[in-house]
Image (tube, rainbow, N blue to C red; front, top):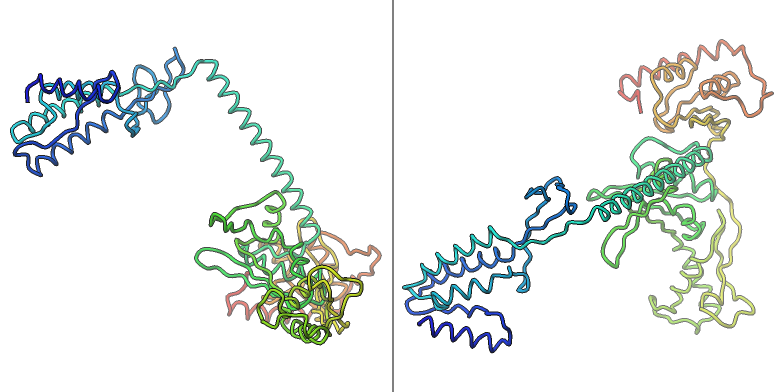
Length: 472
């Protein structure tokens, strides 16, 4: 194909495109061009297109050389190389240089000219790599000063917010320690949470037995709280809202961390877990309520077990809204007078009878200090107990032992037989005094009692040495 023919074809192509810019023709395979030759040509064309899409970005302050860490330097200005794909991001001279190449060698690759075309395309590739597009993102000195001022203001605001959160967290933590000095402080966060929730909820809802199980699976912690009858799940949730440090978002299949100052303080004092569930078992009461509902209105319910208006579902929703006092016995259900509109569960209410409360014996607190040491009386066992917020140092342990107290692995406390003398020593160790300042204290304890305590302590220490459980 002659140069005159090629030029005429390119002019016709430009006229067809309706633009004044010359555009290269589509490359075509000609006589004798084999698959391997075509692949070599296509590889070079691909490299050429990438080089023609490269550009250099200039950053810094106009009129003032400035570099940034991690960038190359060209004429004292920060430079970075990038590739931006797309047909509209080619070098401005890309089309013109290909048109010039095709005007000399043609756009048809044959066995005779494909090597010449590859050599010329490689030269173009080198030229575009050495002469990339320039993207000037330099700013003026005024713009730079404004960015620096905005960044400083943002950092100051962040620091102020963080300091305020730390102050609020410290305040909440002090309040929690003063209100709940008994909270367990040793162990993992999720294990501490399980133990502390049992005691916390047991004090808020006396007589109700709570069970808390902590577990770890696939590097994720979980605590599962359960109880039978007693308060509703909503009532319990009012006291466990900070048990988990976030929640799972099913909309985007992600876990959202939602911690605040109070949540951080809760974690430090009570512990936290990633996943927390609280479930109430009312299965026995549910059967009683179901039977009562069928007697009251045998035709008023859908007999399908899992239907929305089935007697089973209505009984479950009734119990979910009904808190049961400790020891209460569910006797059935009754019709609510003067209710003629609303959901089915609003037409009826659960009937209960007061029952005997079986409450576990909990230690009675005698004194506590700001540093978290708690002295309590275990009336059931006739003992006095000392609890530290963390493992005490060796000097304190020696002092506690010399006072006649022994370590209980089961109760996680130092204990001794209760006496006025032991109470006085416990107050001294805790750094406080009895709640009643005029409480009589026996400064001359029974020598026989002290001898017996020393003997018991010696026997206990010998066994602890054998079992290697001297410390927690």
